[in-house]
Length: 234
Image (cartoon, rainbow, N blue to C red; front, side):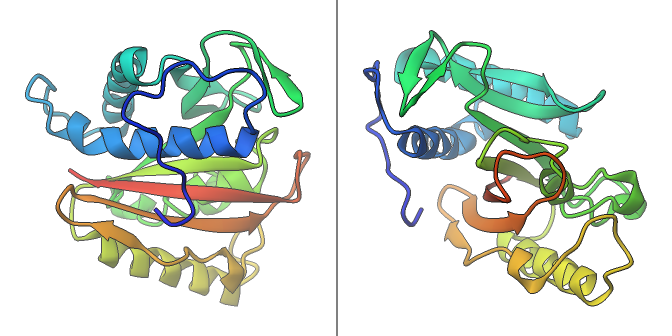
């Protein structure tokens, strides 16, 4: 992935003082590398639903992190605002200084939402982007500050169960374009700047990645959030 540092297969324990952005990018790279191995794991029960996929992935990431990324741990369903829960979180296995901030095991370093592509029903077709007034959209909840209010960077994992990564990249950007042309249609404001950046496709492993940046509303640590999109062809 462009601009993303790729750690060695065995990262080991990183000493205090590592830059926060560097560590976040390493977590993304670790997850990206594990996605096809999780999907192809012969012991993995075949499931289709988003909650089961998220739970499976969390178990797998924790298992691999113990030997390949021992300073990180992963949690399924991290509490957020109100009764909401984001699907996955990554946090440290012990308290340490990251950049200028002290992080404990209770402070998520990274939050990720999981979304099926396509959505499970036509009524939820655009849920990767928006749930309109239901506020159930993946990107939408990050824009509204309902998810990751205290993070500058977050991620969305897309489980591709039909069509191709290029199809979904084009389709998602078309949905964002439609929302930007109809500002009264959604509870948050959209513009063409919300579109996904260039897709990087790895057809051999069935993984694709891209990023996007979004203006936020609500009480958030920053006025914008950077999202990394990690997609795996199921």
